[in-house]
Image 1 (tube, rainbow, N blue to C red):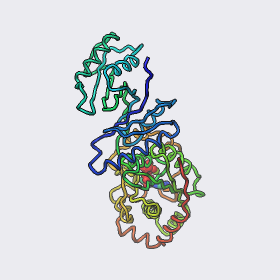
Image 2 (cartoon, rainbow, N blue to C red):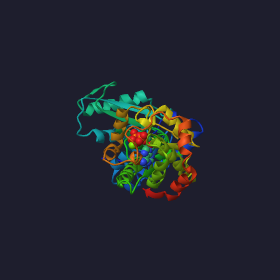
Image 3 (spheres, rainbow, N blue to C red):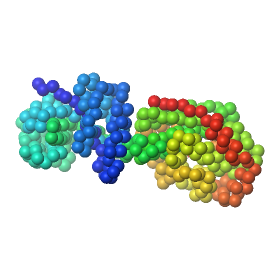
Image 4 (cartoon, helix red, strand yellow):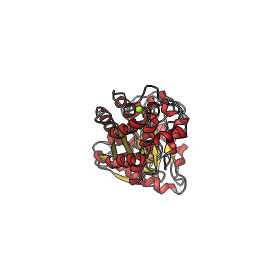
Length: 388
Ligand code: ATP
Ligand code: MG
């Protein structure tokens, strides 16, 4: 019996690798793969042509490594593979072991040669290994809808044989696109928005505004739980808490009720931007989706953008609530988000806030406030927590 030598083989989309980006992409992907698997080691990482190999020699938990890798952003797919020398006999030996005791109505061999000087073509490898399987199992070949696929990847130094491929999230590795500051409420949308930014290669800095002691601290607890969940994709997160209650009290003194939500939101953006700049973030991100609530009309979005000195990214802008919920379920944030809480934007706000504020209206109401002082105060009073 041959000793199986397990490895996880990681594929990424070549398409996302435009010329100069390649080394950067691979450097971040490699670092993230190591971070994602640090507690299920040991393993060694090697770059091969067009793929990454995680050598699992001596690793007691190959499946756990594979499952971790399957959610690293930038991974197109991964598989728990077995390594053999690139001879037909070695391939047969390992396939013999992998199919032992299995029954499957149909199958195919899917051979790929990563270098074209190998003496056999992939069609010839498919035929030879297919015949080998047919001698041992009562089954048939089905090239279009096989019940079972045996993948064989022939590289110069060795060959990888594997059965099941797990799809990864795709996208770009976290870190490759720089840092954004995500405004994280306790709601359903903003965690999904933050994840979408991670998927485009951003490291996310989280900023949460709360109204303790005017409201109970439940929103902070939810923000913590959400960040903990999302840290599975970026391995280390910083969450900033901004006490917003006193600032809101000042707003209430001068601003009529219908205008408060927009004024709150403009203050949030200014404060988040201040915090973002100090930490090198280049953009903000929110969970806004067009028309979903009163503050998310085009007019009010324009009022919010007016005060920002950096881009506000809104990755959910064109998504329906149902799509967002589905995504939140897949991320495991939905259950956290639907816990009841009191969001700070509801504090001192009427049931029907203004949906179409003009630039002049907002300017007039803000003239009664010392905006600069409020923003400085928000930035100074922010506290940080680290998750890893
Ligand atoms: P969510 O489901 O993300 O709470 P929402 O549908 O409740 O969004 P709004 O309340 O208008 O919509 O909030 C829009 C966006 O503003 C949120 O997605 C989030 O990015 C930001 N935001 C709202 N409240 C807070 C808060 N307390 N702290 C940080 N960001 C917030
Ligand atoms: Mg909300």
